Structure formats: C-alpha cells, structure tokens
Length: 224
Image 1 (tube, helix red, strand yellow):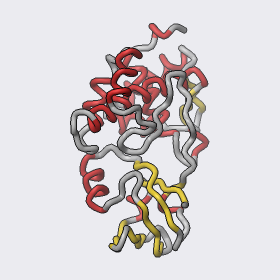
Image 2 (tube, one colour; image 1 turned 135 degrees about the vertical axis):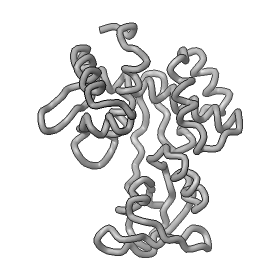
Image 3 (spheres, one colour; image 1 turned 45 degrees about the horizontal axis):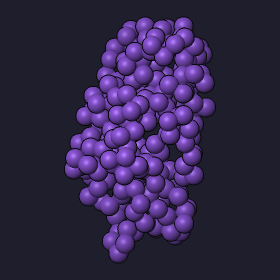
Image 4 (cartoon, one colour; image 1 turned 90 degrees about the horizontal axis):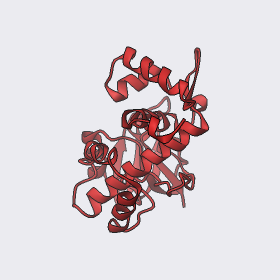
C-alpha cells in the first residue's frame, strides 16, 4: 500500500472510525450502521468502502463486533484528523468563526491540504495543541499525548473539575453548550447526579446548571 492509493474519501472514513472508536467501551470496535449514520451514506456504500479499506490493510472487520483500525489505518486517520483539527483552529483563531460553524468548512479544506500548508496554518493559528473543541492535535508523525480525562457523566461529585473537550460537532448542541459555559478550559463542580441516568446539577463559577445525562456524555473533564 502507498499513500497515493488512499483517497480523501477513504481518509474521511478512517478519521470517522477513529472518532467513533475513541470511547471508553466496545474495545475500539465500530458498527457499520453507526458509521453510515454519521457519514450520512447508505449501508451498501459503507460496506463497499469497508471492503476496500480491509484490502489495503487499513481496518479489520470482525463478525458480530464491527470494524476497527489497523496500525496503518490509525496512522492515516490521525494524519487526516491533524489536518482537520488545524483547519478548525485556523478558522476560529485566524478567521473569527465560532466553534459551531467550523466542522463542515474544515472538512472541505482539510482534504486538499499538503503538509506544508497544514504547518503554515498551524503557525498562523498560534500552534495550538488542541482544536477549538478541545481534541488533541497530533504532531506531524501522527503521535499525540492521550488526554487524561473522563466523561462528565462519570465525574466525581463536589470536586473541582475542568472541561477538556466536547465530543459533538452538531451546531445546535455546540451553541447550547457554549451558552451553558461548558467549553474547554471552563472550571466546574458536579453537585449532584440523579440515579438511573438522570439529570446532573453543575456549578459553573457562581451559577447552577441542570443538564441531561445524554448531554453530559458529550463532555469530558479532568479533576484538578
């Protein structure tokens, strides 16, 4: 396999598989149905692409488990994510876009970026270590420091916490999280979590907020 054999569409698939697999369950496996939902393509289209990526040794497909990236696939996914996250940082830090406006624009830009342009955009954006949503930006060789964080829904109560990253790109949810103050770097305390996946009571600065469990699963935090 050579890099030239991997199309921009293939990299989009690999990057999305990596995003979906980066969660605390399922051992990194992703179902083809959820991949089809996220990419908004048909199940047959996903199956055809999975076959191609498997032939290129970029992923494995286990019956009843799903798909997972090989080491080659992970490296290509991180290269694509590096360009996408730098493009997002450039759009916010240099061009003044809001964080809920940038995902699709960055997707269009990043598929055509060379490493030279990617590096120049990173420099203009201030060489950020994370994208505007808090996700780590891999360095040129595809490595990065794994964030030491947990889901807000799993966070301990009555301890100082800091938001590290937000795991959604849906514009309405990002706007809502920003209105609540749940953005990377924000300090907070979880006052109470209702049982059975009930709502969470948070304190951000001097204000109290109530959010649903599903929304809390999109936010990751670290203890101070």
